[in-house]
Image (tube, rainbow, N blue to C red):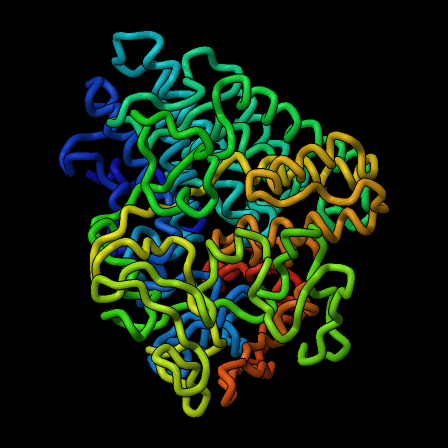
Length: 581
């Protein structure tokens, strides 16, 4: 049976051998690899095993929470109320090469991303080394399997280097004589080139479908996924973190890839969903020809039957806790709908307590939740919002002091908001209390690629017609007016960055966006909330306050460290650990 353990990867070399990985054995636990690939069903089962290394993302992190609580999008209400809490550990600066708060076992699949991604790469390589000679009677099926495996390898590599920086490029399974000390770290560009090559191979494969039309295949990768992975990888590669000289050719490559993706995807029926808010309430239904979702991460058994209303709840509705609460910074990011102008232009102070109000926008400081971008109402529960079903009736949310859903500052608890707001996105208010939600994690969707194009095109060529058309397509879907036509490149950059912030909110983009833009020190030092007091005449007074100060904003937090175990066995990892670690 020793032959079943010869396929190992760098990350797995440090795992305790008593914790046998599912892919260190063959799919049924008995067959050898040779046996697997002489059987067509076992061959497909092994490909399914490669898919099993995709993490759950969404709210599958420890104690059912989102990553938004470690960005400036949200404040996690579990901070101070649970002994083991991702946001509390991360935001206090406990990340080290030997301790990553994100790796704490959650309730979904593969909480340790570093190990999961290396596992996926290893098993994709095993599959690719065997598939040409495997017993797959239908040639088109073999071809499709091969394309999927290459795309899965590209996906795992991209997710890995997005978090940790460049990693050794491995195209073949290791045998038990391999000398790990010879491994070296390539440049970020070299790994991106490798990822793009795998994506291109998938795109060029005639047997890989553009989209899934059969329900039983809804978890499988398509050409559309290849376009999405390639677009995101090239965009990050052109960004300040990985493009310190601001090479315009990198931006042009990202713009060209995004433009091609949009052209091909829209020609094949992809388009933005007409209703931004409702789009996030349901899982992918291929029979209904859903048009915006490119890939949706399968729900795990733990998550599939769990009510989102339990973990992101208002006190007026039976549930578990408030969950991740939107920050005042996020609320400030939403434009005014009538004018299309930013309501808040920034802050006069480092505490974010003195906003710079855009007087031309139509924003009223005494009535701050009126007339905002419709995506605000689809994302945030605020004081005065109408929650559809609390004990069978419409409920007006009351976050003011003394209200039924009030902010509680001293001491904050897990049930009441820490910011004056509650999460609305992904929550279906029509559901009865403690009902299971159908929402699922939309890992890739068309709106992101439009915004990739807008950003990259502006950086490469300025605010061209292509750049404007891309961002305005996203804004118009949300019933927002076009951006002003006379913006400078710098002004357009800021507007597109803000568009990403609100369009892709709570979708695990913001955490990595602020890192690739190298603005972490401007966004993650603190977050604020809004304390509301009801006056005797039933008007309200609003007071901003700092709800959390953080210590994970220094430059070293731009890239996560290589785990100490791997750095100790691979000399080049030890010599070239990520900066600051």
